Image: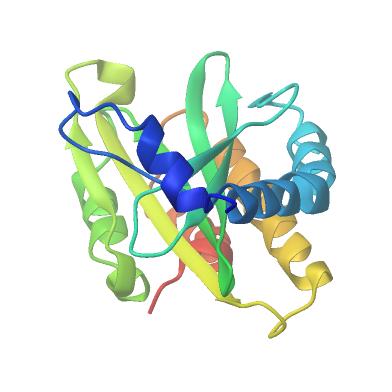
Length: 204
C-alpha cells in the first residue's frame, strides 16, 4: 500500500527535537509556485522602478508561516544602502491571500516631538497602531514602524487587483521614504506625509 505524505513525513522527524513541523508537500509546492510564478515579475518590476536597492535580486525563496493552516510567504524589501525602509510580505494559503506592509520611518532628534506624537496618535492608524523606538543615534533618533494588512479569499478579486495592491504599496512606500530622507517632518509637511501614508497604511 502506498504511504501517505503524512506517514512519510513523520518517519523523517528527528525524535531528538522538541517540535516537528509537517507540511503537505503537494500543497506547499502549489502555494510556492503560485507566489513565485504569478507575482514575482510584478514584485521585481515594482521594486526596480523605485530606483532603490531591493531584495530579492535573484531567485526569491518562500517561507513557512506558523499557523493553524498552511501559509507560504514571499518577502521583499526596499533599502537605502543597506538600511531597510520598506518590507512587504505576500502570503498564500488554500483559501486566500494576504499582503502585509511595513514602513520604517526614521526621524532625527531635531524633529519636533509633537510631530512624532501626531503620527503615533493619528486616528486613521488606530486599527494597526504605529510603534515607536528611540535610538541614541542622532540621525535615527525616532524610529516609527507603520504597518498594514490587506487580503481576501481567492476569487473575490482577480490577479490584477492583487498586483495593483503590490505595486501601490511599493510605490507609495518609496515616495514616503523620499519625502523623509532628511529625517525631518514639521507642522507644514506632516499633512502631506500622512496623505501619502493613508494610501497604504490607513487601517481604521
